[in-house]
Length: 298
Ligand code: COA
Ligand code: MG
Image 1 (tube, rainbow, N blue to C red):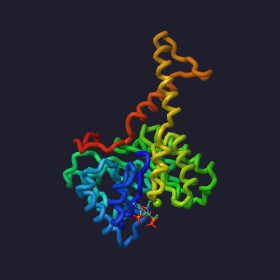
Image 2: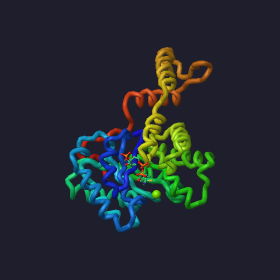
Image 3: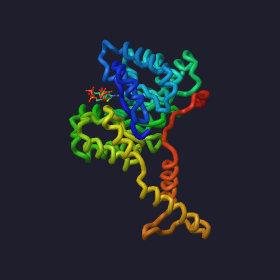
Image 4: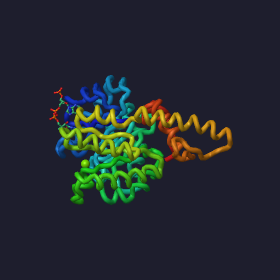
């Protein structure tokens, strides 16, 4: 899931276009891009489109960002969009493990009511100071949590933190990456509003990639190709990883756990990373799940 394109739930003319585009995932939005008096309309639009044959036949990851748990829209949103085509629900402004437990309860109810036989997974947005400080607890709250997504617009604007200063972005990305890593869930980068600024988008995406993020949210189709290009391992990375694994076979056969390549020490953490790079180069990460039986304990 290198790229994930946001589509406002009110802009039905964009739905089919987004589905035909190059993004690995589509994230229909019911939250900040939808005005209050059109919330129900947006929810109905998205639910209807999720039932369409073209979504059914698509291999894109299908995500819906619902309204926050503190609003009256939260439960109706989840009940309406928990449909066979839905892979993940994106929860905005998550601040605690309790927020996850509440969402899981409603998801279970929705799956039962709608006859859904797979466990819809959760992408939890970290976009408030409290959320960032509780990110580790949120990431590990429930097996349904697939990943954390950073929301720098909300987080930085509310605290007057300058996003143009790359040090601020880096510190925050790293903090959330550690929280996601502690629970072995993925970290996902958020949106970049100035879609005409390709350099700015690319530089945030590259930073996120260097920090082990899976991909970046896009708000305009012009950002998709950049994300798809950035969130892959380079040929050099893959060649080096293959070399590490090859030399490790030889070293391990001699009972040696630490050895050198080009003067650099190679031991278990480097080997594990090389395995991950090679595995990721063979298959896209975070693929659409089949509609299987709900399997987590909850
Ligand atoms: N999904 C699919 N297609 C999109 C799209 C999207 N999110 N955004 C724009 N397009 C299409 C347009 O329809 C247009 O297609 P065309 O060439 O066939 O006419 C083309 O891409 C260029 O669009 P453009 O005119 O530059 O954009 P716009 O002015 O219509 O819209 C935004 C700009 C930012 C308002 C719009 O891209 C958008 O709503 N993005 C998502 C916002 C969102 O969901 N925010 C919440 C999460 S942070
Ligand atoms: Mg927001």
